[in-house]
Image 1 (cartoon, each protein chain N blue to C red):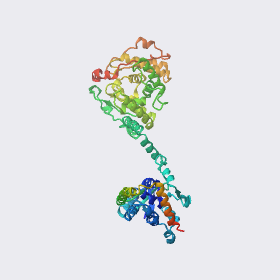
Image 2 (spheres, chains in turn yellow, cyan; image 1 turned 180 degrees about the horizontal axis):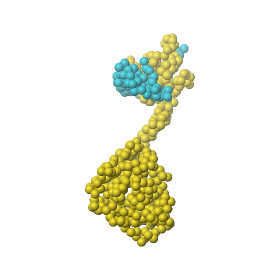
Image 3 (cartoon, rainbow over the protein chains, first blue to last red; image 1 turned 90 degrees about the vertical axis):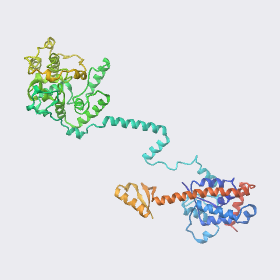
Image 4 (tube, chains in turn orange, purple; image 1 turned 180 degrees about the vertical axis):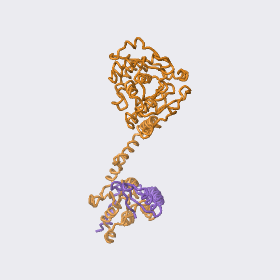
Length: 449
Length: 99
């Protein structure tokens, strides 16, 4: 909004003719602040009473008064601080003084040549110039946004369609974010998380066990290092190197699954399995996979590798309702996890891909084959020697309640070499675990009394 | 008395409450500045209502002003704008510079 002072000649002309620029200037001035002084009002009155105009044009005294009253109401009154003599005397300077006092942007007059071009910040312009200056089509933007939020707001207002699309996009983004992150434990909650033991090891009567879940939480120090090594080597050999994700393995799994057009190979690391087993539901969905990725990063951030392995070995399922290494060691071998032999440790590690299906009481032959693979891997990794791997085969396992040994190694097992370049086939085609769970026999039945 | 207020300095909620209390109770007015530039004004609801009334009055005055012109315009319809403007300019010149 501009502040303007209109010279008396415009204010007089507008009363007498509708055609001239004066009327248009007044119409344009309506959108701005118009200032007048007592001198200007007096000059308008005196001019309208002058004989020159009175003789020629038709208007009443009442019309003059009404005209002046209108000007007084729509305009702002300013009185310049100049001497009374100057103000009283008819003078162009008195009009300019009003504009200066009002801090006006423009003084609009038809007698432009009687004034300086600019005085004390007031620009003296002709009616034509004023009309050009206030032309809506040519007017510069009055409020140029100075800050980024203002610029963004202005841009959004100027582009309503894009704004709507952006709104929808950000709503979807927010919904996605909520689906992915809502309810996930924070880094602090992961640090404080510790699964509870459901029974005390010494008081458990395994023969009278119902189908309730069993977990006996023990620190990593009380879990045989052989089991730790067997699990890491068989499940996630780069566990100590990666940050939660084994990218090469994921790429390879993706390639193989794509080739076979079905799910034949997973690429879950120990941390990803922990995220899934400890904090997420068991239904296979894309959302769960995405939440698993987010959670895996948080677990890696919250816990050390040893803490991750300890939690994993205490949470992982090793038979129907058997959770954790300690419960599994006591259930299958009637001993604590700290006393597991190489054969026993490798058998437990071999069960991990599908602990319900690979039940040694039910399918010892298959379990033995899997166990041999784990031993081969351990030998390849030079954690054990080939001789140790050979000696710790299925024949070295005795399950309480069965006649020892449980099963003789299959011809294929006995002929396979631990130093073979390909210790097991590329594809491990296991039955669907969920289907197996529903049809599996309870452990209380499987385990002989 | 209009006071100036730098927006960036308004970090204390208690201070802001005091300012608003002054505006409401005493009618104090503030010019809000951002980086030294005046950007907005803080004034009481009563003052705002007054401003709105003034604006309405002015709008009506403008309407009445243009409406009242038509009567005189009709009386002097025989004169062109150029004629009128020349006569007005001459009359004012005589008034300002009588000699």
